Structure formats: C-alpha cells, structure tokens
Image 1 (tube, rainbow, N blue to C red):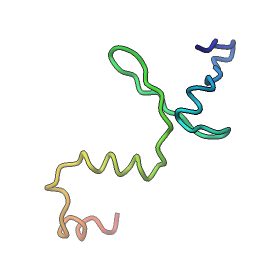
Image 2 (cartoon, rainbow, N blue to C red; image 1 turned 180 degrees about the horizontal axis):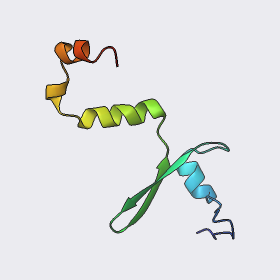
Image 3 (cartoon, rainbow, N blue to C red; image 1 turned 30 degrees about the vertical axis):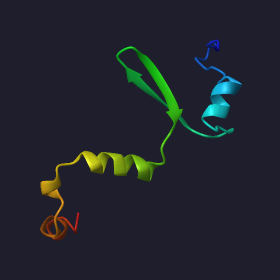
Image 4 (cartoon, rainbow, N blue to C red; image 1 turned 90 degrees about the vertical axis):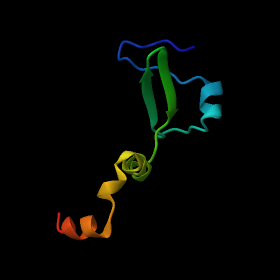
Length: 72
C-alpha cells in the first residue's frame, strides 16, 4: 500500500520494487484494465515497437512493401 502525495506521487513499496527488480531512475508503466490497474517495468522503446509490429497484418510485410516504402 502507498499514499498519494499532493503532487500525485506515490512510493513504490519495497516488495513491489523487488518483484519488478526496479532501481532509482527505472521507468514503470500503468496498464488500465477493466477490473483495476497493472504496474510493470516499462519496456524499452524498441521492445514497444516490436510488440506493435507483431500486431500488424502480415500482408504488409513483404520485400515489395519494403522497397515501396524505403524512402519514407
């Protein structure tokens, strides 16, 4: 449990920091779900792009498409 300050900041409890292997300066992410909010270590930007790319339709992934959009 943690208390929200007047600046809307909260301390991450030690058990959570240890479970997520967090250190000062690490980024965390809040994922809003229907029944609550999940907290996780933020993914590096490259990993986020890879997750997004995995959701794209495979018909846009071809050598022809790569050539057509190479100059963008």
